[in-house]
Image 1 (cartoon, rainbow, N blue to C red):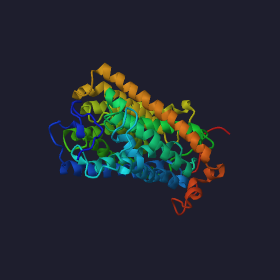
Image 2: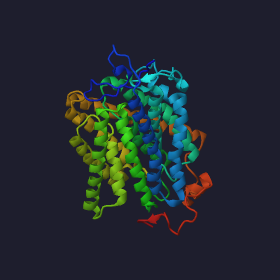
Image 3: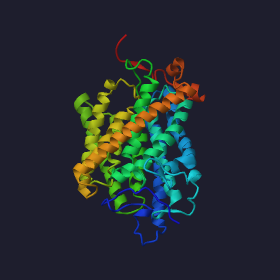
Length: 438
């Protein structure tokens, strides 16, 4: 029994992955090597969300570290359940149309014994669940230290079903309209990073800035946690990108090597910009550069050559670095720069995918492909941005989005979870630092 899958284009574009990618006269067969690789890849992608929790947690104040990390961790629970119930079928269900998948696979019904290409469809569904999990977790970085935990959980569930799943269908399902247009997004530039980035920016606007912003700077309380988180993200991202080949072969190998090159180039580029502008490279800058490079290469990882990956990493880091420097002009307190790092780098990566796919012979002629890429970027921004605004307003009718001011000042951990990250907080650890004004 076979089951349709999203037809992620490889090299060249005519090489399509999934059940429909096989020759019509060939019967799909289970490949144990591909299955083993995809099981490992799914586990690697799952590790990315705890890695993100460390990354985000280190960047916040000590008295809110648990709440920050819990917003990432709870995403595993929210999406793990909802993806099984309805998320998967809305994204990849049989009998769908250009906008949404069919409802035939509610509760993962009908997947037992099915194949997606050469792997069990259960494995494909689990792999895709990991993508949906980290997409939601990314958004939390914009509203840490002030958004109610319950409000985030409710918003997260709605966002997964009503924004992420339809967008995944548009881009990765054979029925999706962006897929049919030929949009190139190998592992989630539009589906994950652009959608999460713009949703995070909208959430920052709706929830409002942290108390005292921008006069009060909330400095990272634990930089080693930031580095640990970035390292885990990079490690897991190898499965994120190379696993998106859905098989162990040349396409996965190209995605793997470009996922090494682009973040390395981005890290060095970020450190150069820091040194030129501020005189010294920082550890937080190095970690941020790695993440930005990973974001930028994600849509292009199997569509471009290694030298093009280096260029994408450098340009993505440059764009995100200056987006961080100029973020005050947006007048939104995106606490951990989710839009600047994921939204901006995701946009740059998606556009450069179209511009550089010729380096491996993928895609349409450059001009035509660029138009398709621009359409996919604009569609993702508009759908996720407007949709997130509506969902946040709906959630606010059920529960306040924001914690009381006294809880925000003293920290979120005790109030939200009756726990604290450290048994004894040193005086001043993670305390607000006044940087100007009265």
